[in-house]
Image 1 (cartoon, rainbow, N blue to C red):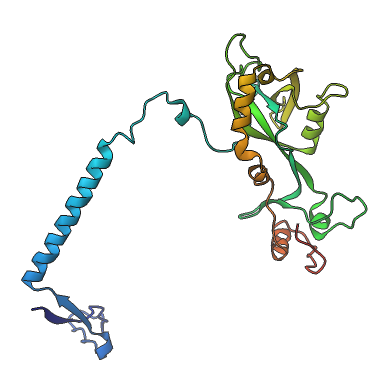
Image 2: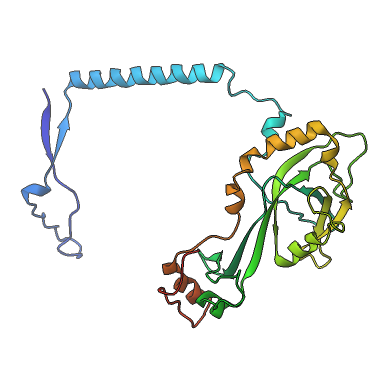
Length: 285
């Protein structure tokens, strides 16, 4: 048999803060009285036994999962050491080099963008038609100036090339991973000029390093033929490695974000621009 008791909230208020005066007992409506059910002894034992059974089942389950060997790992496991993220190829220190080749499997992706500082802001796609020089400039360009060009290209990064000069040791198998490079308009032009006359940037090896002032990258051709192309097995391995990127979605996601018409004025306000966007004259990009 269960007993039922009435619980009265203990949030009392003082009628006076003077020492020696008694607190007035507050008055409550019936709706403010909470009913607490106290289980009988037999019920308590039943609940206790149920919890014990559940604990034993969980303990048994955990014991089996820890002893089946599925979670075991060996140091040096090459698969675990390789990152599954689509990372940008960068060089952090002056005087260091990274060697790569631009892969032809997916065409580079581009976007025109503006940048606004502030929480939740950053780079966003330009609303103007930048493919037509005669097209009118939209509010983003009027307030922030001409947009920047961003290019994302898929690359093979030679992970065992020397960081001192970008060279590969003769007789040592090539090791690589798949990354991307993000290029400005000037960097896109620099890489385009690395191709031999009537040639292409696809199929050459390039090294990138920080400029002398430490701001931005410079690119140089290190080989007129990409090293990986000389090994048919390596070519096949690269083809398999690029499969997750063939639809271009992962590359497009690395471009500046698209914003809605309704968000543009917030960006312009954060940048201190005086121009407001006419929402009827802007199309989503």
